[in-house]
Image (cartoon, rainbow, N blue to C red; front, side, top):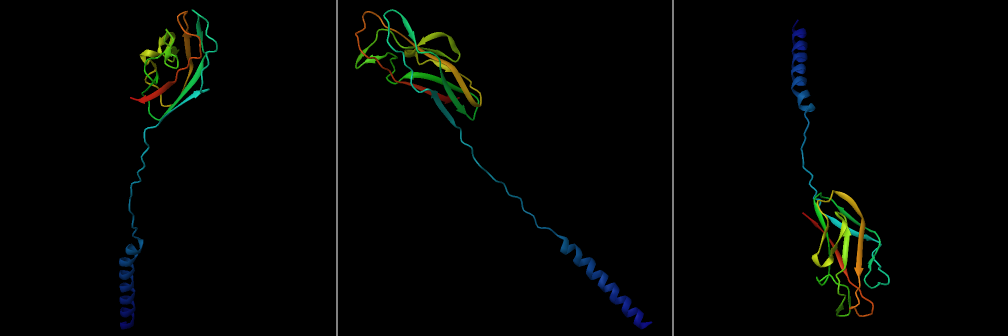
Length: 163
């Protein structure tokens, strides 16, 4: 009987030891971390094709460039596309001699009427997120009999601004 008591005591001690160590073995150690990445505001403009050609101007006749596409790619909705001439006056010039009429533009939300480039018109406002193609950008110029013969040029800048 003493032997049975000793064996039962050992079994009981073993059961207690295992019940204490099993939860210890089953513990998990976890840690949570936050991963951060910043996407900056981005806006990109592409004119297709890059140059507009009015060809030969005819006196007292408005010559139009034909429709071109300007694409704006932006990762935020709410942008504005404007067009302006680099010197700010909006007139095509041969050296320092400007034409008597400003260059006109239409397209985007100004698709019905031409607006003088000397006003830096807004072509599109509150643009959508993603790529937006403004497919109806068109320039027009009228020459008058007071204009001197020559080759007239103008450099315009399309500017997209995130509102």
